[in-house]
Image (cartoon, rainbow, N blue to C red; front, top):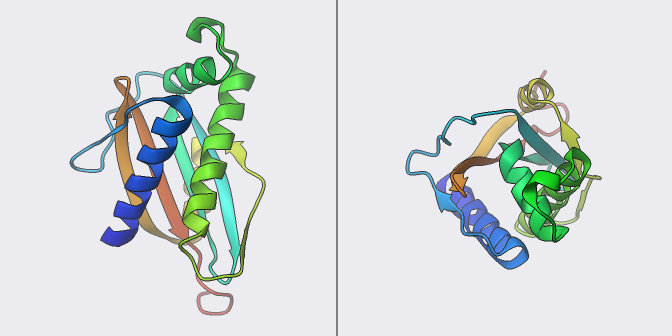
Length: 155
């Protein structure tokens, strides 16, 4: 769904610029560069008139850079917990902005950090309706949106 991809592109660019002061560049083929290390994935669900979820995945290095900005520290001293908190908050803000584009009423779940295999399993329960890849500070960033079918429509 190209229009949702474009909305997600605008939402992510705005959030990262306004909150972190970072410029994110969309990858031309929506395939992010391969992470050089472990990644963090934030997850938030949207429930109500529209059912789905948003996932934000980035390298641990980018998450630490973002945490250093928020916590006004050196990236090497940013803890895994701080990086996870920042990614959870960024996916929450992203999901909240996306929720505003969906039929009402909808509510957001509490954001969480999940393992990549769990993310893949959760995405298997629905249809990917938007996926936008970015690069920020030379690191990969992927934001995806999944829509779950209405109850009873799919086995």
